[in-house]
Length: 122
Image 1 (cartoon, rainbow, N blue to C red):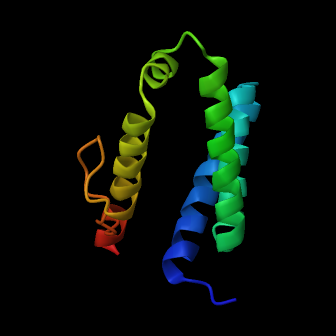
Image 2: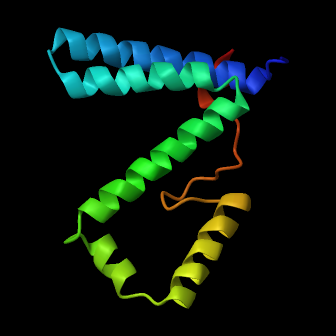
């Protein structure tokens, strides 16, 4: 398997952040912070295998859908319940288009910008 340089770089950065969060969580006896760190460490290893990333992504999507369905009083559930099939399909198509042609996200930064500000001084 050929290791993509960008994937290797991301893996290392995600691993370092995950390791730091795990240590912080252990030191503070905070299970949530420790777990988030452990998730990041897991992802740093998955990044090398596209099949693993796809499977993990599908598991996360299923978990998210489960949480939405369990939260029957949530605004998201109410919005979905009030939509007809055509509206849901249009929403899905828009989401699919946004994922295949991303330029900006809701936070206003460019998703196509791969420059790492930390690397400028190297």
